[in-house]
Each structure stands twice: as C-alpha cells, then as structure tokens.
Length: 322
Image (spheres, rainbow, N blue to C red):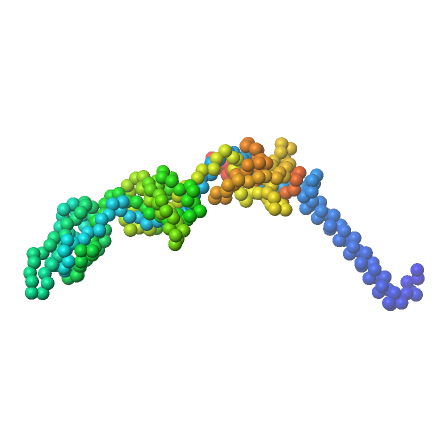
C-alpha cells in the first residue's frame, strides 16, 4: 500500500482500527491474569482460601428468659393502730431496727372536749422499718398503715415472666440476679414459688426467687435484672450460628476433609442460644467445620487452616524475647 496516496481520513480510520485492536489484546491479557489470581472458587480451582475452623462437640445449651424484678423482704408486715386519731409521737425512723412488741408510735384518740389515754402502736414482728413512718399530727384510722416492718436479712426477688414460658416454670429453677449498683457482680438465686394464675392484664406469671447466699450489697427496694434459666438443651453437637451458610432457604456447613478441601453439607438445626446452635443432622461430633471465611467457599474449595496461626505467632514472639 502506498502510504503517500492515502488521504487524511483513511489514515485516521486505520489508526483507530489499530488502536481498537491493541485495546482488545490488552483487556484479554489483563483478564487472563485476573482469572489466574482470583480463580479457584469453582471445584478444582488453584486458589487456597485461609479460614478458621472449629471441631464440633456435644454441648449443653442453657435456655433462659430475661425479666425485671423487685428486691424486697421475704417477710414484711404493715403496722396499723388499734384506734383512730392523730399520731402524736413516733419512736422510729426509716431503717430503724425493732423487736416484736416494741412501741413504734403513739396515737391520741381524743376528740375536741374529750380526753383519752394515748394508744401505743406495737411492732408485730422483729425486723427493720422499711417504709417512712407517718409524721406527727397525721390523722389515721384503724386501716391506715403507720409503718412497715420487714426482715431485711432475708430478701427475695419478685419477677413477672411472660405467658409463653409458663410451661417450663417450676420451683427450683436457677437464676442470676444483677443490680445497677454492682453491674459486674452476679447474685445467684432459686425459684421458691410460682403463682398459680396468669395475670389477665399483663399476660405474665409471677415468680418469687430467694437468694442462695446473703450479701450485704443487696438491699430491699433495689431493682434487679433476672436471668432465669428455663431449660437445658442436650445431646446434640453445637457450632456458631453465624458459621452456617444459607442457600435457597436451606442451611449448610462447610466440613473440612483430610485433603484440606471442604465439603458443603446440608444441615438440620435445633435450638439456638447466645449465638450457638444445635446441629441435629449433617455434622457429626469430632468433625471440623469452617467458622470464619466460609462465605468465599464452594463445595471442594481448597483451604489453609489458620486457626492456630495467631497463637503460634505470639508464642514465637515470646521465644524470641527469651
């Protein structure tokens, strides 16, 4: 071809075609390189995926329910006067210790133009004053509570449990109680009484729990958070629930094989508690499953188990220092 006879437009067209061919060749070359680097997601690929694994074992999962509770005295009694009148003298204050028969207050039953001997109000039980007594000058009747006496050495927790847990509620269930004043401390308690009826308004059933040990840090009137253990789930292998992969509404786990490849298995799940789930079918006790890195895998993918890599690295650092 005689280049001198080519027009400017022909030269432009030829240049454009050549540039296009070069771009296509470049893109195909990059694509092949990327496929070599990123390939391996299909069965038989060369890519090795780094994963963390766990050997599944049978484990007991403790089912529980969280509820709010009120800490109060196991034995408390409202104190009433024998006669109506006015409180003229109070011998106790909030927190005062009293014995049965001690005089808590005096009531004057006199009416205008009349005079009667002042009437003493006695403590019906030994304990402490757990409510603020009425002030002097307060008019009372025989139905008026002057004070409340309670045994604060023996406390209990009253909690309302939702109706859906009624079937598992019974005496003897264990619980953990926490209070805002000591957020890192757990106080153990046991269910001592279960209400025979369900409250029709709140749709809850009341349970009463007694502390297993007396602790001076727990006071009557405190608000308690109750973690009530309701049922134990046993005889099944357990794995982290977020290690499962969902495909077409089915659950799968990646089981590690001896040749450092994985097998994707369909599993049947059971009960789940705090991020752990029972596997009733699909994985056997003692088998190793992938718990991190599973989203990049396919059936047959090659893996490198780095579960203990961090610990080995730290051990190496320690040895080098020594």
